[in-house]
Image 1 (spheres, rainbow over the protein chains, first blue to last red):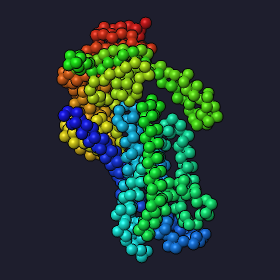
Image 2: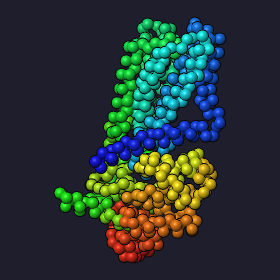
Image 3: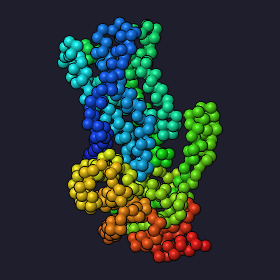
Length: 261
Length: 255
């Protein structure tokens, strides 16, 4: 009986830890800037504007409704880029508490990813507003498709963040590599171009890039109300794979965090 | 079996032949480059260059005891606290800790400067192992104890170092710890608050909370502790009554 109570309390404590850490990040984001929400939406929108000028007005890519096309891709990409970009330093930023208090350290990257996820979810109405404004119809399938993709993308981002944040404690160079990696991945992912423009013989690269699968799915979902089953399954496979590897690496190394930091 | 358990529960902390070595990570700071180009050397240097923080240490702290640790800087005191808190693992030997550990952190650690005092209390309480509802039940007591009054709604970057120390101590003082770890904390804050802290610590002692106390202040050690361990050169020099050990320690430092 007492054991049962203890387990219940432990689970409650774990949930509280996650909530409080995520809340902390959200509060900090909004505390000092009263336009907090505006800024988190403005960032991808400004990117969309830049790409619109560069690729529609100057390079003239043959994609219809290019602004909408960009917006649908940039918001999910921002979630990935923000979380992964912040992950290398996330344990260093909390070194003080890691060295003194014994608590599950994975809460720290988890809160980071949840925080960016919540921002993405809060931005979905903005994407939908763009979609409706461009004359598209709303799709009932969104209610299923959006949660599915959010969960899948959460798994993969959390997995990658766990890997990078853990390894960067031991190999500091990883921080630099991460920045380069995000940059390369951005161009390897169909954010500002359509996957249909990729020559057939390079298409295999697309299937090796989980973010590409997610992006194509997000765009199909917002613009056509559909998900590609094969891409969804493959992206979930990647999600579980990265999450598994991340948990494994974290478990192997987390007991040494306090020594190395 | 029941008999055994009775004996075990009398002991709060036990170290059996505990050794802790740290690899010297700066040899490794060459990072990926070194590892890639000189994998064998990299791993070898990792294994060979180790720093011994404590060597073959054995002691026990009974439940309800106030246990002091003294010694020069770098003698291994903080390593022992880290081992008790469970943030680091021993390289050799066995450690048993019986009960929840509450470390009292140095000034401001675990606090976020942009959050208010109240928000920081919740954050830190949960970090220290309480659930949200437990900490909310205690928050009034904590705020009263801290005497921060209306400042509690201000972001703590506006606090003075004394106020930060008060906030930190107030949290730990009011969360009913089983084992309290204190690393040289009483030296901060004004005289009034220091006295209040000391009084609270003596209350803890009265209430039979197990306390492990690291300090350079022999006065506090003398007042608070039932037993003292003197660490020198990463191992135990002596353990015993405070009067005796403090005297030896002070003589040892002079000669």
